[in-house]
Length: 455
Image 1 (tube, rainbow, N blue to C red):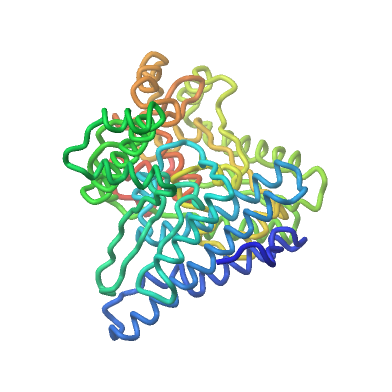
Image 2: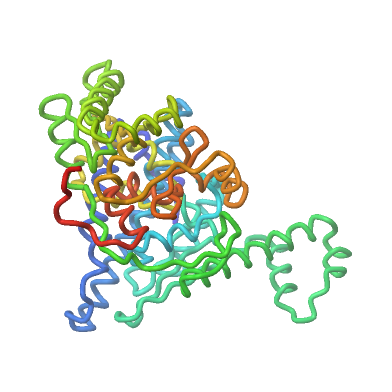
């Protein structure tokens, strides 16, 4: 594959238009098409269909690497280049998620860092070229370059094989470039492996490279074991975990978000609140003061719901006293997702492509405010016991799991019915568009009520 020619996409003024076209194509010929009931189609047609789907994946992979190369070579400000690169890399995350059969927990297990890893341009190009050489399209196989993703950090290649269309097989591969790496790979495969031989032939650098290779193999084995067996060592926390299927279906609010964006596009601004605690404000960025407008709208929405929940004033006073000014977690909806490694990418949200593109190009700005007071109000109406853990308990939790796994309000975490809400739970509410109510009820294993009675 030759990238030295007409690589102009990312330099065109229509960067987001082409991004939207690529996402539309991926949706039409890729992402939603692999999960249909495969036993409803004759094998020969199914194999052909899957081949075309993998071809769409490969075309998107080629677009992503071309866009990244052009962005890095462009004269755009660094902040814009960084943001746009994350946007196109989330397309690769969407492909990885589909290859994992839309199991977001599996995607989460494949990330070991809390931020997207940077990969130099030469390595990116080589990786994509080798992936294309591994699986010429159309084919029952597809190889995704993990360096293009933000979330798959345990290997160089994620390979799907559907030679048997009714049996999805996934594997991870390493690409070892260079003579020394190839020789060290052979040495490690030798049952009589001797570290002294490596030291005398390759020196201290050889020993360090062997240790890196062994660590990468261990990480791959641990992640694959955890995904396959629903239990194992989590790469981020290095703790043993046991994953379980949701006991209740999780409700999402994608329709509410879609409506919010459309109303903002028509009237300039719109607000909504989900389950009393997740406040949303969307504004059209045609106004130069759009950020301030969105912040004022959020403040008004939070105040309105605080007034409605005055019936739990004793709880409210206790919570507000405990958390002080840290009552709200406020952020840009899309920017939060761009940096949420291991979560469902915004390119896989159940919104129409135009709305996703508008969010990406900042034609529409959506802010959210997650309100600890509102979470308590929700638990109160659901008859669920909730409390803020002490700072000492929270500090111990941070020490055990790491700060990236613990979300706190003024150094205090929320506990419901004896279960601590960790960062992953809040990520489901924000990055996976699941309602706070369904997330909390799933954690404590209770069915979602059809009607919530007022207190």
